[in-house]
Amino acid sequence: MLTNTLVALDGCVIALLTLLRLACRITERQYTGGMALVYAVAAVGCAIAGWRTALYMNVAGGALFAWMWWNSGGGDDTKRRLKSWAGRFEGVRRTAPVAS
Image (cartoon, helix red, strand yellow):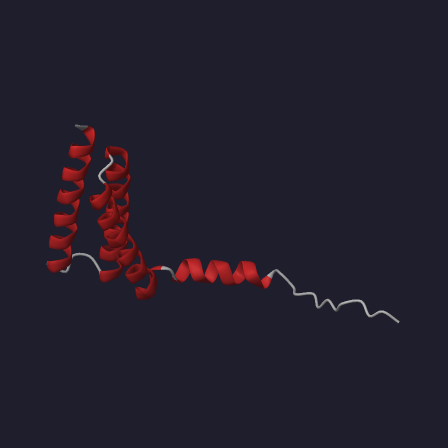
């Protein structure tokens, strides 16, 4: 019962996001990010209910929208943060010991 409500609510949120995008009220990045989150929540609901086919479809849709969000500039802050963390590490060149 609760899972049916969750999936129906996800459908309503998907429709709302699509209408907002068509009305140009949200950007493409906001739309793809929101859809990725909605599909992830739907996938959790399907996993709890044991609906395997719907689970696979929601995971695939969530992965697609997450990839679109990442490539549309949604992950720029994350990329910048990872680069700043990577800058703190210094590579150490190690050579194998040479037997005399």
